[in-house]
Image (cartoon, rainbow, N blue to C red; front, side, top):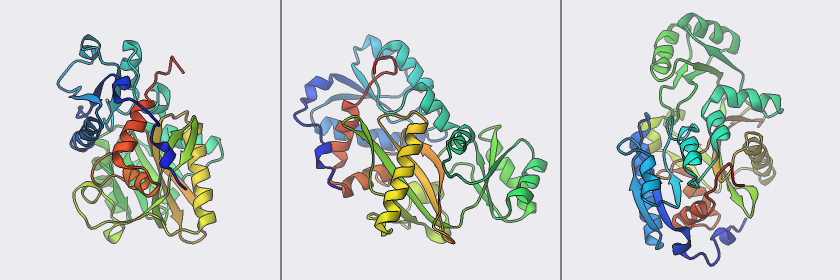
Length: 323
């Protein structure tokens, strides 16, 4: 797939106006957001965009209006930035922003709500249980089987996630997840290829970028391995059969559209080893843009540089109320 046409043709950086890159914030993913936002800010400035840093943890969002900001690039991750709250504030301020709107951001941040909608729409996602105690976690293990994944319902970057193989581990796993969110998700573990697939709006249409296959040490693609080590192998091109990759890309685009996403996103998919059945895990509506991040990696293989990607996303900034 040749994606060179994704570079916005003839866009004058001045036409994008004054741009605030929102990063930092108050979520558990603050450090990752700072890495993402710093990269985006540097990329936009290198292309001649009048962009500056804005940390909502340190400044009131109303200052954006006072400073005459024309649009925002959201490089916030997690709650308070990716969950519809900042999007709602920008809607009230009438400042266009990158990524999904209020409803899609809110739903996608909640893994349980996302799975309910996908299941209703016939999209494949692993079996799950929502639990509110250690006892319910143990019952979930009996129902779902071992291994089982225990994680916060509304958190990202594998924060608070534990792979449970025995009932004796449920107490610690539940505690690790519950410290981040009172809603805890127990999910059937899918043994197979871990992969991810970005989606980008191009000329008004949702397009899947190349799939990335992820090979982490001992299958442990945790927070540390995601952002701070170089021991994970990322295969892009994925090496998957062409028909298999195309089918997964179609499912991911369906998943994106079903939640009403816009702008861009990245869906995480497990491909079961036994029968090659893909399962959707979650979708990120404000994906990482760090040196280890996956959307820039996929876009590069598709012919789009990091800088071009940032400008493309910024140019797509909009409001729910003005479509």
